[in-house]
Length: 477
Ligand code: P53
Image (tube, rainbow, N blue to C red; front, side):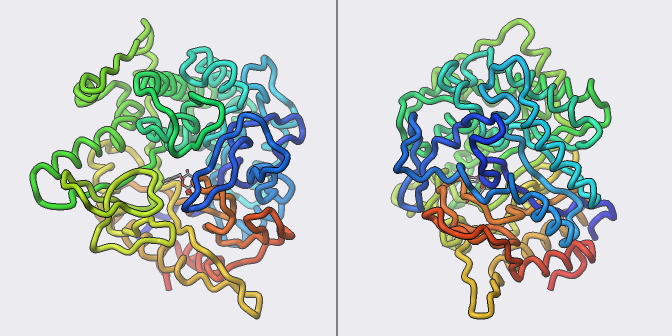
């Protein structure tokens, strides 16, 4: 049984849905320099915005101009919570500005007021892969400690402005991508060359982990300021939990799985939940010649900025092995090999609802703080039939099977207090930049070439989710 106050809802990120990339004083974030790709073609970062190139974030699905219509649809589904991110570059267009951009602040006031009208609680991510480009260009992102101060200024500005409108906050989306080369640009704001493929960037592991240290500081300072501004604020970490299994029962596979699980899944949350670096990271740093500079106050800052809850995204699981020659999972930015017992999505993400229960048990066992699933969903191609309907039974079946496992975890006394499915509306895929990798309950007429009317249509999953929320998860058929 789901608790009475369980927060059901859906999630989006500013750069993937808002569009209006250069309106109302906003300047470019890194996403505005990312080209469209596909499962076989990596997205590229171009330092100049080129006129002949399609940058999907520029228009996206125009949530910026359609937010009233979209939020009304969320309300119709019965959303209790709506997860969105603030585009940092709407508030501080260059990142290092002294004063915020009033028009940017006003936009989110309007969005939160619209949510309030329907009794929908906003859950707000401060940094969802959206660092202002100027901070990357002029400061090399979070490699520079000044950016910690700029982030704190941004966090403080929005906490003060929205202190009576927003209660739930997340600092950095999928912060643990910073433990892998693919996190260089999106999490840390590091770019070692002007034009590159973001999934496969140049990498300097020492620079990357020092920047990640600075992101921990930025997050911790934001948590502290949040609690000073409003003691009722609840601030969470956000981890992309890539659940891993040893492929075989060889002890070597188990040990490798444990090591990777620690570095990729546990390290960041250990720092953000407990406020100290965990013991096992020393060995990893030694092996990789990483030497983190801790300034005088850093230990204290981390300790004072522990998060209130743990949030995570969960889409899939992977297998880990020391054996060579196994087929890796398709379209997978994260390594790992195929699991013979699981089916994968069209984009090669292995679907594993029971893995979600395992993950909930694992995380709760480790931290004993409230958990929130802030992303879970199926990217798929949706077709409109002759009657204008989108029968996305595959999405319903994906979500249903995951909700069943959430319920079992709750019955096992795991303190899970919310679920925002990815994504509330169709939007631009972060990994591939495609529109056709759709996640929403609401179809948006827009294709990969940027054509379409942007008309919103409810999918079959829309009415299904409405019933799920209406029965507090009791009726899943
Ligand atoms: P897309 C990879 C693996 C797990 C989560 O992803 C990921 C990624 C990055 O692609 O990111 C999150 O759109 C992210 C969202 C993103 C969503 O997963 O690539 O927080 O912004 O859209 C789904 O299919």
